[in-house]
Image (tube, rainbow, N blue to C red; front, side):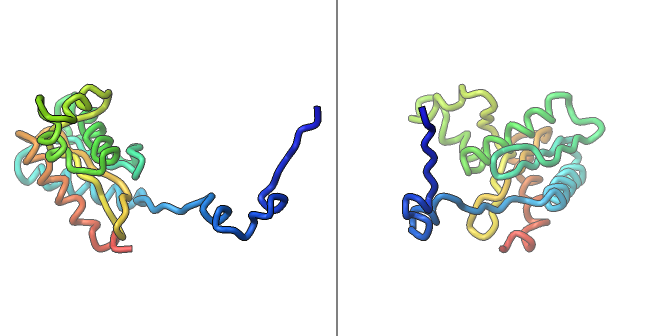
Length: 163
């Protein structure tokens, strides 16, 4: 049996809107921007007396940078990565996500998905109106403290995010 190969040109679609919609471009953080955000977030936590881990991911939730302070708990790297993953996946602050998914709420079941962390410290990173990455911090005395450090990390790269 002969194999039939069709190309866009053979179908007459080479110049059509369909052909133009077959690919798209995305933007993501550079490793340098991810590292700077992580370093600033870690330092912001240190200044407040917290030993933390900080993870910065790309827009898909894949880790680009992970920093763990020398006395941060052994659980903090995993939790920081999962907070960043949650923020990237759901495109929202994990502090807000935690409020929206409490028991009794319509979305409460999502908390049972592996890697989902419904506690503050994870934030999406946006540039030019699009998600470009996420940051997660773990080890502070509560989600609000972790989120304040994450915000400091994003602020440090904010000027370079305006694409």
